Image (cartoon, rainbow, N blue to C red; front, side, top):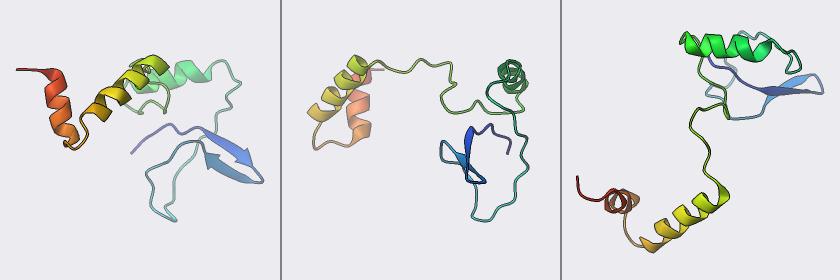
Length: 96
C-alpha cells in the first residue's frame, strides 16, 4: 500500500493528522516532504495521476458539500426515522 499521509512533528514524533490503516508496531518507510516547498504538490499530483499514490485526505476532486447541503441532508435522513438507511437512500433515488 502506498499512501500520502500529512503529519505534524511534535516532541520528536510524527503525528498523522488523519487515521492511517496500519497495524500496531508495523514498520513503514517514510519520505519527509516539507509542506512549505512549492514543488511538493506537483510531485504528489503526478504520483496520484500515475496510480502510485492515493490522494491525501482533503484532496479529493469531489467538492465538499456546503453547510446548507449537509443540513438539508441531515434533515432528509432524519425524516426517515425508523427505516434502515439503505431504504431512505433508495427512496431518495426514486424508481430505476
